[in-house]
Every structure is written in C-alpha cells, then in structure tokens.
Image 1 (cartoon, rainbow, N blue to C red):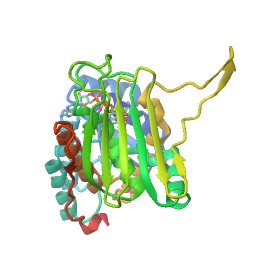
Image 2 (image 1 turned 135 degrees about the vertical axis):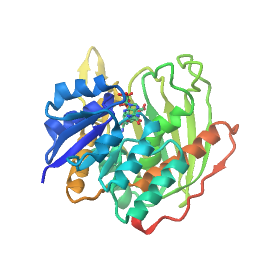
Image 3 (image 1 turned 90 degrees about the vertical axis):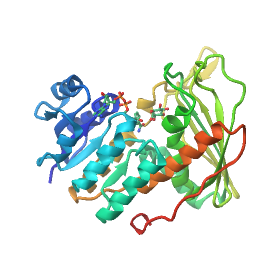
Image 4 (image 1 turned 135 degrees about the horizontal axis):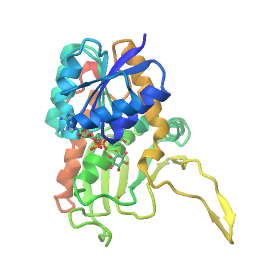
Length: 336
Ligand SMILES: NC(=O)C1=CN([C@@H]2O[C@H](COP(=O)(O)OP(=O)(O)OC[C@H]3O[C@@H](n4cnc5c(N)ncnc54)[C@H](O)[C@@H]3O)[C@@H](O)[C@H]2O)C=CC1
Ligand SMILES: O=C1[C@@H](O)[C@H](O)[C@@H](O)[C@H](O)[C@H]1O
C-alpha cells in the first residue's frame, strides 16, 4: 500500500520532509499540502509534489478522503489542534516537536489517543533514530555498567534576535530532554538551571549560555550546557559515565586533515546537516506504521513528558538556582 500523505506547514522543515517523502523514502506519496500562507504551500507543490492538492486550511486537509496520514510541520503553537483533529479522524499523524506548547495541551492529546484506543501519533524526536545515539545506547545498555552521570552539550553557532531565554528549553534542549530519557530508560525527578557569565555575542533577550541540571528517578545526575551563540559550529555532545567505564556519542563523520603543522577536523555549522539521516529513518518508520494504521517510536506520552519537563526547566530558569521538582502522572497502559 502506498500511504497518501498530507503535510501541514510547508516552511523549512515541512518542505524538507516533503522532499524526503517525494524523493528519498519508499511507500509514501504527497497528495496534499497546506500552509497558513497559501503561496508557501503552492511553492512546495510546484517544486516537489506537482500532483498534490493545496488546501486552504489544515483541518480541510485532515478531513480529505484521499489523505491517509498527516505530517504536522507548522509553527509549534498550532500543533495541538491539528494533532487532535487527526486523532478525531482516526488518521496516523507525525507531529514535529513540540507536541504541544503546554503540558496541559499535551495531556489533552494523550487523553484523546487513549480514548481512541490505539497509537496514531509519532512525535518528531529524530535523535532516537540517529545511528550515533543508537550505538551509544547499545554501549550504555550493556558495556559500561550502571550509568551514574551524563554530560551533554547543545551548541548552535548563533540564533536570531527573536530567540528568547525559554526557547533554549522549549525549542533547543527539548531534544536532550527526550533523547536522554530514552538513552537511560529513566524519568526526571527535578531540574535546576544555573547561568554562567553571559557571552557578549548573546542578544539582550537570551541568557546564554545556560546549564540545566537534571536528576533522574534512578539517581543519575545530568548536566546539559545549552550555548546557542557558540560561534564555532553546531555541536552536539553526550558523554555517559558508568560504574565500569565511559561512553561518548560518536562525532559526525568528517575528513581529518594534517596540513600546515596542524591536525584539523571540520565541525558542522547547520543543524539540518547533523541529523539528516535520522530524519530519513524516522519518517520511513512513520510511513511503515501508517500503512498499518498505527504509529511507532516517540509517542504522545513521550511528547507529554517532554512538555512537563520543559515547563519545569523554564520555571527553574526563573527560580534563582532553586531545584524544581518534576512529578509525572501515572502512565496509561497504551504507552507501557
Ligand atoms: N526535529 C527538528 O530537528 C526540528 C523541528 N522543527 C519544528 O518544526 C516546526 C516548524 O519549524 P520550521 O519549519 O523551522 O518553521 P518555519 O517557520 O520555517 O515554518 C512553519 C510554517 O508553518 C506555517 N504555519 C503557521 N501557522 C500555521 C497554521 N495555523 N496552519 C498551517 N501552517 C501554518 C508558516 O506559514 C510556515 O510556513 C516547529 O515546531 C519546530 O520546532 C524545526 C526544525 C527542526
Ligand atoms: O529543532 C531544532 C531547532 O528548532 C533548534 O533551534 C535547534 O537548536 C535544534 O538543534 C534543532 O534540531
């Protein structure tokens, strides 16, 4: 079966996901597009999916009888309503992060999916599909003993003026929030944020860098440095310290040069390049599950837990170094 897919939001990532479904992946075809700006949808149609129909609204696209599955790639604040509409229509739905911008909104999606009775939603936490993180997880699961500490860093070269302090959590660190939970098979119990001396390259509305300290239910201590004006590159680091050894996330493949009396390895500068393969793998998994009328991978529950944790971290940003507890409700059977 070829899964007929509609894409809502044809900005940067919606366009890129349309390209991969139209040109790279197997088993799916783009039949529908919609964007708040009709020209944006038409442009993507003309460039990548000439047979797709453009819809005036995401709701109409979801309701269309020839749309089997939906990709929600619009601005974060619009995700919740579209995902709820897709569940209502009984259609598999891939939702880019965040699942919702509030924990309450994400809880509503959990409740709707539980009421539906089976999984329909995959959240776009693509790092779980990254070959490097998967290799790291294998080692953490079996070779370095019980994990004790994680040191992580998420560094971007620069961010635009509209990037504000809470975005370091909601937009950027949300990837670490999800992937470290998955890596350790654990949940968070508290968050604390401390601010080092600010970089002179940071805009006035973002405190940068910042360090988020998380504690897990099993007692692991995690420090995540978020530095979005690091200047030098897009750099994702993750080191797990275990009782019997230590494991590092592999660096992206790059040619090392020995030249002019130095050894040099280039570092990526654009996040789109860093996880390009993982986006392919996550969407291929979505297409295959959608063909069976279901969803796999990062779930609505994972999106909800990420939202609860993000909210706690944002509270911690304003708490003058105080530790903010994180309490999770009981996990419904659908997600066990
Ligand atoms: N997994 C990942 O690594 C990444 C995820 N994202 C997420 O993807 C989402 C989109 O991000 P970008 O593509 O970078 O943003 P963007 O700003 O380039 O595109 C968003 C698009 O949504 C459209 N839009 C806004 N409101 C809408 C509505 N109500 N209905 C339909 N379309 C609407 C806008 O017109 C725009 O074309 C965000 O939630 C972002 O966090 C973005 C980049 C990377
Ligand atoms: O999701 C993403 C962006 O929105 C965010 O701004 C970047 O920091 C992340 O690394 C990228 O994966």
